[in-house]
Image 1 (tube, rainbow, N blue to C red):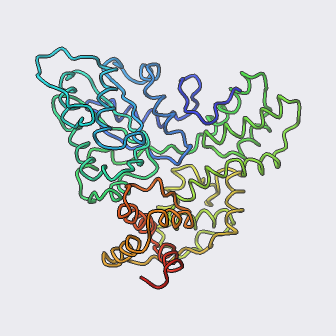
Image 2 (spheres, rainbow, N blue to C red):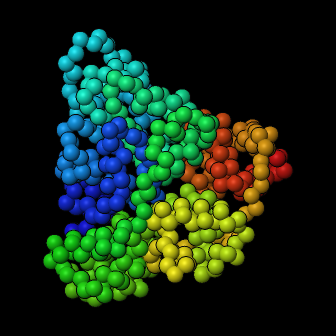
Length: 432
């Protein structure tokens, strides 16, 4: 198979597009002083592949004047269960990449299971001439109670040490402010100050980039698509690389088998095959984002929605940044007929109008949280999450109070606690 569908791209020769994002990335981390930056994208937008691409020596040599002065450290944060686990894994990766420092600095590493920030800082102080860039993938998967606002504060402190040059690159779906709120970090925290003001979005590929991603792998496999075929694939897939490859691979298989690809048949099949990924997106969207996507998919003018213009424009820009919408002739459109088909099928089961945004007081939130803690056990909370379309296991924390708190946070961040309170009353009556 010439197309790589699913696994992160490991070799630069197989990586297509993202020229603008790569250029911005190296401008930010390659200046007189390294700066931290946030990379945002929906699942399957190619965040991991991008981090692997920019960390490859070939890519670094292309963009950096002195690539030997840089050390890129990739770490999947979703595999770290505690801050100590995070620091231990980071320290081991640093040792593999930097080796032992030549210094008289006295330092004894903490015992296994007790690695802390000081261990990493003490080690890095041995390499004052290196610029260290931490590539922190899946950054919004800080899942356990152990990761609190203190961890983010420590992370900021690590970038401010004068004895070495270090920057953090976070890759996530949630923006850092939303993630910080989930961990209890106040909006005024200096943690946010270390990051470049605007994130780098893993948005839709440029037309020429998507065309190359369709054509080049097919040609390597001995199949040459016509211009009409390329346009049909692009219309079906949209412009996010995973979906372009998945669609092109399906088309490629039909051609290699000697058949004539059926665009309508492929559209319906992919809408079903890729539904788990679209469903992941759906459960991450806010109520307002869902409403706008359904309106666009249904051909309704967004001016019909009862949103302030500033809020509407901000949501549309965000969805465009994620590569889910594109604009043409002053109108918004869904990026890709396959996703459009899934939205239309799913829309039959969803309310078309936005929920009323209700301000909730701290007392309201506490009352709902106590109702969950006092009236449900862990298995019942898991069932409640299933009924609400939530991923119970992805909620931070292990204890019942922690899970209850994050359930409330989940719906508060969507400006609509109605589904949660309705589900509670359905199970336990009018207890709130």
